[in-house]
Length: 224
Image 1: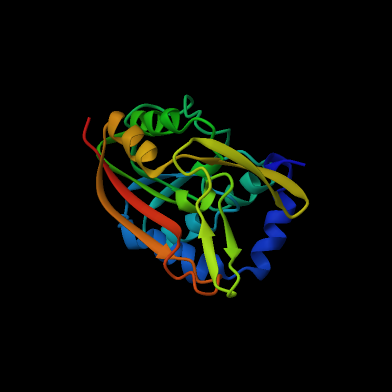
Image 2 (image 1 turned 90 degrees about the vertical axis):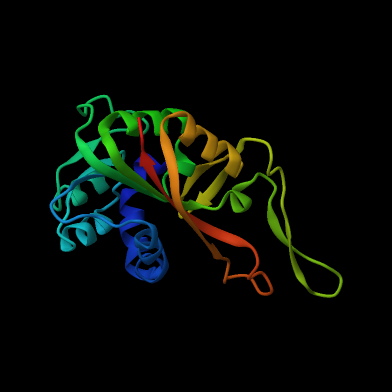
């Protein structure tokens, strides 16, 4: 089973996971300032949770979701297209005031194509807000280790090399693509995105590892 087949699992998982409301959504809006009446594109809209928050703030939202089950749910909140990122060819150029992407880029195989495709559909002066697992966390071979004194340390693995890992998630195997932070920022810059704000959050689930980043959120401005 792959991500495209695990929509029902995701819906069940959300019922018992407070992380979106307590960590993920607040972190997104730490870098994202949607304008009432503006039109945004949710890249990987899932079941529509963030779309509903956006609507409550007065914004208009369209979704893109590869899983048909989840797209059906988010479609109840706003128009949602079933597609696999980075394919946005069915949207008109310069048609959105901005876009956002939550915990999805690490599952997209072509990161440069992602930034380029979003730049085509967002108007000049629009924004792209991204929340993702921090690259220090996704590197192949990265893992917590315990030394002889019982202290939990972090092994960075192959941080500087692009790669991927296939992780067990529920009953499925999901691929996480790893790129060093410089690779992500340079791809965005090469496709017209200018960094405006970035925040990181420490990992609170591992003892003694408050200094290890777990998530990051970035806002870019499209200048070309």
